[in-house]
Length: 247
Ligand SMILES: Nc1ncnc2c1ncn2[C@@H]1O[C@H](COP(=O)(O)OP(=O)(O)OP(=O)(O)O)[C@@H](O)[C@H]1O
Ligand SMILES: [Mg+2]
Image (cartoon, rainbow, N blue to C red; front, side, top):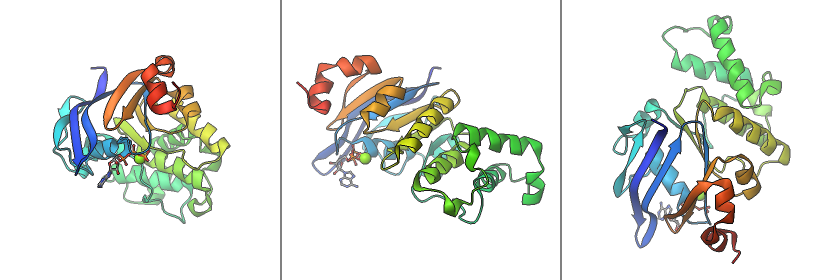
């Protein structure tokens, strides 16, 4: 199956506000699918429903063919949904490398009870190095987490999400407020990640979106008004009017 995540007729209202109004959306293997739309369109609410933080009023969410819309957050994460959090379990006194290693030990904990043992495990170290490369953090591997910049910490958070070997990764404005060079690194990183883990990306910066997204969906007032390849969305009249403010 080409579509790893499928959302069908998902609806959620907050009082009179329809944050999701029969949303249909899919994430395909190998793609970066950007979700764009004006402030208050319902982008974050959609991601929160996918991960399970907010329960939908109606509709369904299928991950790899399995209905997850009634599962709790930990179950969904175990089934392969990943998102990054502002508050993560980054250990400040540990290096970037050690943080990632620890995350992997957490997953394979039956085998590695002691950190010292894990450090000398070739396979585990290879996995850490792979994630360092995928998140453009190789140069920072020995940096203690507390000394990372705001942006580097976000990169590490993405790395920690990848350590869980998720089926999809959900990112709500991961680049907001970051410097140009970190944004460039993240763009490169997502291009590397997507073959293994498709990315659902909420992003306001249209230059970023048009540069890396394979598909774009436009959400306005809880409704997807267009989905398509980046070049088609750029030309779409309704999108120009509703979102980009051009008639
Ligand atoms: N917990 C909540 N209770 C009540 N209303 C909410 C709640 N969460 C979101 N809303 C409302 O639902 C709508 C969609 O909000 P949401 O945060 O999903 O938008 P968004 O597209 O992520 O916007 P932004 O681009 O500003 O992040 C808004 O009108 C918002 O005020
Ligand atoms: Mg939001």
